[in-house]
Image 1 (cartoon, one colour):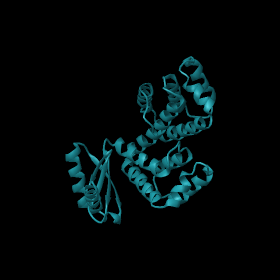
Image 2 (cartoon, helix red, strand yellow):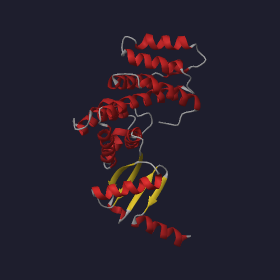
Image 3 (cartoon, one colour):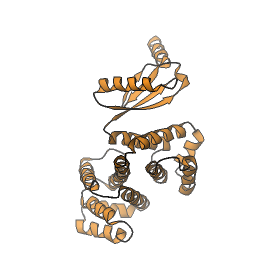
Image 4 (cartoon, one colour):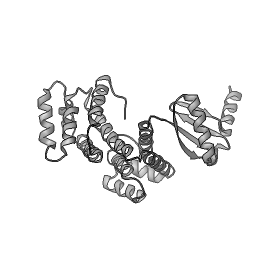
Amino acid sequence: MTLLHAASREALAAAELKLLDVDDFATVGDELFAVVGLLTREPGLRRALADSSAETERRTALVRQLFSSKLSTATVDLLDSVISSRWSNPRELVDGIESLARTALLVGAERAGKLDTVEDELFRLGRIVAGDGELERLLSDPAAPVAGKLELVRSLIAAKVDPVTDKLTEALVAYPRGRRAVEGLEELADLAAKRRERSVAHVTSVVPLTEAQQDRLAATLQRIYSRPIALHIEVDSDLLGGLVIRVGDEVIDGSAAGRLDDLRRRLAG
């Protein structure tokens, strides 16, 4: 999700507090994603709902007129709260509703004790897609029919993942909103990690790391960054040796390839 302006951040924070009062997170998440799809397709509607110059009662009345007979009471009440707030622009209103949909599903997974599983599955799906250029191209093609992309995702997943992983992945493909598939899956995995109040270290290694090596690396990074760190590991034989670790915008390059590149830059300079 793009960075929100101050008014939109405040509106989203208020809505997130209200979201935590719902009972059926799966239903609310599904229904909010459907609203994201509608607002993405209907620019006039999203402008009308985000228009802070219009009376709040008029905007909330429109929400209830559109959704009361189609969505659950909890979702309509949440949307009523969302629309009552001030959003910086229509795009950020849709960003906020999408964020709430994702949060609803992740909170549901968290309360079911499945957040670790969802995070791991999202990361692995991202690596699978990243490793297949044609698959990434098909899933990220904005001109491709959504039905065909969803069918491709379902054949890839084939009921092998948690339902929350499935729903988040299908929503990403159906409503990419400018994101490519790999980028979106990485973002979702990061959101799941942050839901557990952990940062994510993207680790690239020349060989798979043993469980003991992963534990030592996580402990070392936790000491460095003074917070728990989740490891997302992929293997790349082109590194020649060592590790490349990315935490946010910071990169720790201990690979042989990285050291050779650094040496070349020094010699060239």
